[in-house]
Amino acid sequence: MNVEQAAKIFFELEEDERDSGSESEAESEDSDYEVDDPPFVLEGKERRSDEEEEEPPTCAERATRRSAQRQGRRGTPTRSRSPLTRAAEPCLSSEPWMTEKVADTAPAVSSFQPRRTPGVQVETLSRHSPKDLFLLFFATDTVRTICSNTNKNAAKSKDLGKKHKWTEVEVEELYKFFGLLIYMSLVSVPSVQDYWRQNHMLSVFLPPKVMSRDRFRSIFWNIQFSDPEEDVQNERKKGTPGHDKLFAVRPLYDDILRACQTYYQPRRELAVDERMVETKAKTGMAQCMEGKPTKWGIKMFILVESSSGYTIRFSIYTGKGVTLSEHGLSYDVVMNLIQPSCLGTGYHIYMDSFFTSPKLFMDLASMKFGACGTYIESRKGCPTGRPNALTKNCESGSVRWIREGPLVFVKWMDTQEVAVCSTIHPAFSGETVLRRVKDGDGRWTVRDILCPTPVMAFNKNIGEVGLSDEFAQYYSTHRKTACWYRTMLLHFLDIATTNAFILHREMSSAKEVQPMAHKDFMMELVCQLCGVDKANVSQSRSADHMPVPIVTVTDTRKKASKGRLKCQRCLQVYDRRRDTPWKCQACNVALCLVVDRNCFLDWHTNNVCDFLL
Image 1 (spheres, helix red, strand yellow):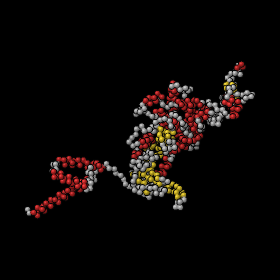
Image 2 (spheres, one colour; image 1 turned 90 degrees about the horizontal axis):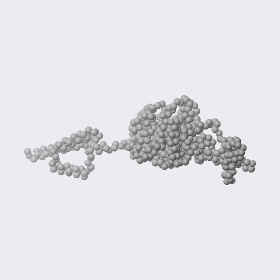
Image 3 (tube, helix red, strand yellow; image 1 turned 45 degrees about the vertical axis):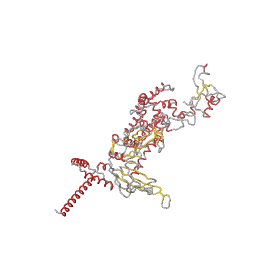
Image 4 (tube, rainbow, N blue to C red; image 1 turned 90 degrees about the vertical axis):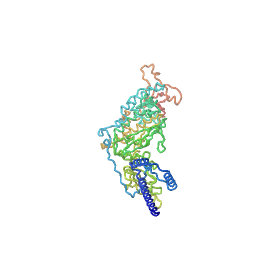
């Protein structure tokens, strides 16, 4: 073999090695794109185990590999061959925002399957008075439990040395107490004492006829919902998982919550919202919300029917100590309020940005609940940084939307940007709203601008949440108290009276009769709870103010001195004590009635009677 033949064979072998090397590189490059295939991991392990059985490389081969690695570091960075690293990378969509010119298709909506027929769950054709509807929420058994615990608390206070007159409170008397609280929501005076003033500019007639002032205050001071002994045991558990912050109101809380769900089945559209019960009582549950009309108070989460404002479920937020899931407070609140076992499926839930999250909406969709609400762009899962986004320079009525499966994100330019997401509606269906805008000449004019479908539905249904608040605020029993559980009693009364009135309207509509106005309903409820006849109730007339003897005696020797009392006008005007056998029949005040001094006439003419019963 000469030199030329040897050189030819050498170059042929070198080309074969180069071809085989390029094929192996191509195979390795192709393997980089199979990271999502789980069998690839196992095959790679088998391949590495086979390589471990081969003979160890020589020193020259190891040196060649180190040189190749150094060259790789000097040039372009080497690509990772680990399939686990690539699988951990998130897959983010980069689709741009669509405009209103691009049609969107609404997702398939679950059929509406409530557990019961929507509406009132009592006999609608029979007659129910306002008191009957109120007793659905404050049942006799519930009030009897409150009476028992109130009597125990009063006895405990008396043992501690508190001096006040107390007699056992009964069920009928406690209903009268509730009636007076509701009456005070209809007739407002500066202080509770003013309801019992006589012959005064602020005098009212009903409270003195129902209950004395001292009795009313004694019941209000001693009212108790939970057993005092069990309450002490619960306080000993403070700081442990077994402590219940709502134990003081738990019996009444559970009974009213159960009644709200029992006697009404809501229609399809529901709304979730926050509510603040104003109080500055010393409790660890008080919250501060800057954006609400009531900044300080106890926070409640409520589920209401959008069309009527009926309160279906509610919960009280007890503070940061509550155990939350990994999804956070807003997620847990909605899931707690939405109970498919009680409601059914196919409901549409509307909420504000505090509750809205893509995770919540997708989980509700899997439970066959639709959802719609405003959202915050920084919330996890919401689209950010996409092309063709809405800007401040966009004109009014501009629409942008992105669909991610059943969830659509919509942005709309009104006076400011509005962001809504929904699993119920298409992004845009051609709706318009009237807005004042500037024309080309800079003059204000009214014209139609485009409005996305989710925004229209959100404004229609979430706005009705305020209907429940309006009913409660018109005639609210709320007043300043030192104990938070008394504040909650007053709010539970507002929920009960509001829901009772809504039931009355629904039943009247079913019977096709005109319902009572809200004020008339409340007045009738007060008369029935207090046991007075509205037709015969009238303010004391001047004829009732007649002088009568303080005592009636038959012994002529004692007529001049028996039962004489101090004249109230002589004490107030002249600061002198003068005894008299006469008093006013209506005012029950001792007054002089002699030839040269007619305190009886002066007292009523000058309207200075300020006697407190």
